[in-house]
Image (cartoon, rainbow, N blue to C red):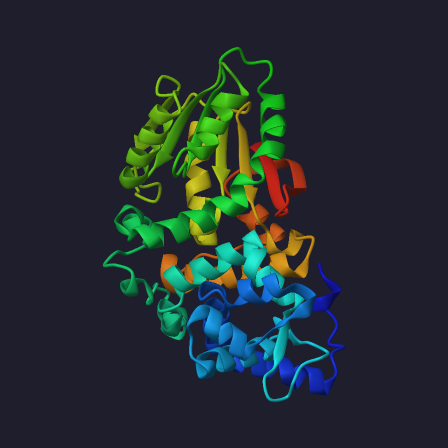
Length: 367
């Protein structure tokens, strides 16, 4: 756990400044997007150490001097831009700061900003209602569904791009390190059968088929998602090795099929409350044998290498609260482990810091 969460060593002046950043967060967020989307950051970056004036930016981008000035002044306030040492007080000359570089070039920042804008921004104003009711009160801004997962196939193309971009950016980068771990335990099986619960667009299933020539994968997910998974599997040439089972895992009548050598859940259990996690794992317990390996790949916020990763996950919890379903979150290691063990499983292995985004890969078996 980071010492940051234990020690309150910030001085009063800095603390007050941080509080103002929070108070004006919606405006600074939109200013950062405008600086990026309108090409201002690009032009300032291209000017390098020489810098560029507000007047020059206005002319190059065909944006009013006023418009450029209010954006770059906010950019200075958030540390994204810096004033050149030879700047004229009448017409500021600007250079790119480190924060501006990450706003413009860092993939994690780009993915998070687009997801926040296209999926979360409008519904975030309903966060307090969501906390009080336990329902995703901000979801109607996207569509008339009980959870966001029911409507993924009905989102606009831009919303789909941002949602799936966010979802895949984090988990997919862990796959290269996760695959050898999973298939090491399956090495003795001639034709291993893996169940991918919450398989989404079949990225993990396809990765498995590419990694191991003998594996067969069954994707278990909602009907809208299995249709997409089937198409992607066929397009990848694995229609004969990847099949789908459409169902709602929370439905009381849903039972998981038996016969899996391993069961995989990647960034799936964070879509449910802890009680629901135990409910799902209880169903899996009934379908598993003592030799079935249960793999859970999750980003746990208290197992991150850096504060930026933990902060992103803490913010993502609020997306679950007000947009996705109203009752799930990004979990801490101990609470997720306990919810799974309550269903009758025992932790056998825990691999932390898997992939560049510090995922945790947990392996369970029936007690």
